[in-house]
Image (cartoon, rainbow, N blue to C red; front, top):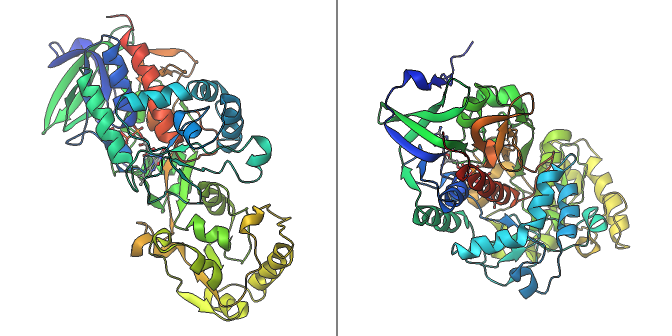
Amino acid sequence: MTSRPSVEPFAASGIGAFDHECGVLVVGFGCAGAAAAFEAARSGADVVVLERASGPGGTSAQSGGELYLGGGTEIQKACGFDDDPGAMYAYLEAALGPNADTAKLRLYCDGSVEHFEWFRERGVPFNPTFYDAPTWMPMSEDGLMWLGENAWPYNTISRPVPRGHRPAAGGFGGGVLMERLSAAATAAGAVTHTDTLATNLVLDATGRVTGAVARKYGNTVTYRARRAVILTTGGFVDNDEMLADHAPLLLGHGKVSDGLDDGSGIRMATAIGAATRRMSVVEIALTALPAMVCRGMLVDGLGRRFLNEDVYPGHWSVHAVKHQPGPYWTIIDEEGFEDVPEPDRWGLRPKHVTETLAELEESLGMPAGSLESTVETYNRHAANGEDPYFHKDPKWLRPLKPPFAAIDPRAGFFGGGTGSATGAAGFTLGGLHTTVDGEVLNHSGVPVPGLYAAGRAASGMHGEGYVSGTSLGDGTFFGRRAGRHAGTAAIR
Ligand SMILES: Cc1cc2nc3c(=O)[nH]c(=O)nc-3n(C[C@H](O)[C@H](O)[C@H](O)COP(=O)(O)OP(=O)(O)OC[C@H]3O[C@@H](n4cnc5c(N)ncnc54)[C@H](O)[C@@H]3O)c2cc1C
């Protein structure tokens, strides 16, 4: 038995006079909280945002800032791409699947151009330039990139169009994104209480959520919300007990978060009967570089390829950790390594370099002949521009020749580790079960009165898959919808 902080609800009748009162109480000031607070304030509600850290940002501010948007945005048009919501839907239904939430996905794709303009109107800058190479994140300020749309089998399901939109930031753009979104929410009238950790929800006699209890500098503070409470507290990757209960695949791996994704919002809501969805679904990123694995191959601990290396890199990462025996290796030859521009190498240097594959197998602890057999098959087909096993794009196919090198994800990018010994890090995608307007549902499928959620505290449009940009994308899109709905909810 472990003791977890109590998330049992408080009865409004037991509180008497509340310390603060507002129309809509938003808990958590990341991207979803900013979007919800902005729209609730624009709807005319007086909004208070509680944030446990000393300023807004959350994991969103530390992110790459990639936003999955499309359907024909101005940036896509300026870069010469013709897109439509149907093509976007077809790609995401496959890439976020199986079992993507089709109702949320349809709204997201149909509303994507408007959502892009919403970011621009909030002052988020996007350059009309295109980065045309495989990467987790370009170090350039280019505004558009591929996120797996041009790789098999997705290029047979939907016309390939790049939809990775990036704030002009030169590398990680989450800081710029959150600077603009938090300023917009504040300008719209939302008031922020920082260093304030919400701990419990408040219920009235009818079971309606009418506020929250929080801790600030060691004191208890109470908030009454006349219209609604919106939980935008992020996911639960920083809570190992919750991982053990719901998403044990991530235990032991690095955590893609700001360190505060402890699932507190999800716990507070489930304590009053809220339902959750997709709690086992996770995103995982291997510390392997797409630019290198495309030019060579990604193999498992038995020297076997397992996916076309040009898909969205999260797909080979999740596949590896879920289905293949580790450790995982990028195998590349000298010509391939030299072909990667220096800034795109992210400080990676091969530790294992050999003239023969037999020596490389021995150095990596692989069964004799395993990698030799993989490379022999790969080379035989690559010589004809073919990859009959995994269908990598012919532009990346070339027989590999000595000297060969292996790069270990556990070495980390830029000379640093990933925070775990495994070379993999991730975050959670499951959360509270919500309607398309962010209303939190109970186990009977009925909205819990007065309670909304968005961002990684909720289950969004993801099925069992993820592509970059869909977390910030769905967090802000459905955060906005939750804010609008809660901002016009009846006053109690
Ligand atoms: C390095 C990195 C790169 C990434 N790159 C991308 C990318 O390019 N595109 C993409 O889509 N996603 C990316 N992600 C993932 C993405 O950043 C997150 O999934 C997303 O930001 C979650 O948004 P959110 O609003 O739900 O949560 P957050 O941004 O984490 O906000 C939650 C906020 O709630 C606060 N909070 C939590 N509990 C409480 C409480 N009880 N009381 C008060 N406040 C509370 C937290 O302090 C935090 O500020 C990346 C993540 C990382 C770490």
